[in-house]
Length: 68
Image 1 (cartoon, rainbow, N blue to C red):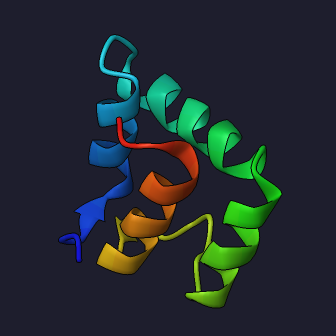
Image 2 (image 1 turned 90 degrees about the horizontal axis):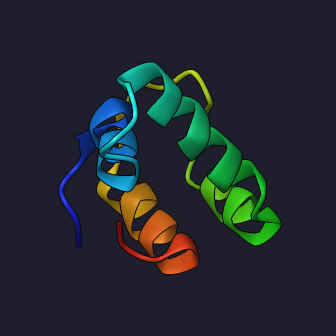
Image 3 (image 1 turned 90 degrees about the vertical axis):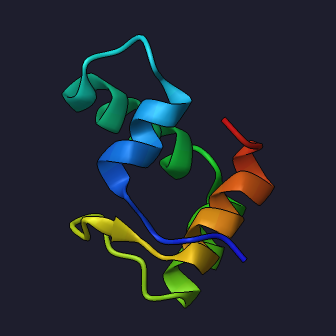
């Protein structure tokens, strides 16, 4: 299983050349564009306002979007 991480760190790993705010917006769009991922994340209690991504949520993001 993966270690928890901040949403900001995860966003920067997917978009290292973008400013943190823009990287976060990009990650949000990626997540929302994948309905199966959103469904799986909701089952874990995912909220758009949470700051920390759990290891399980990180695993799901990697599974559906691929690793950064």
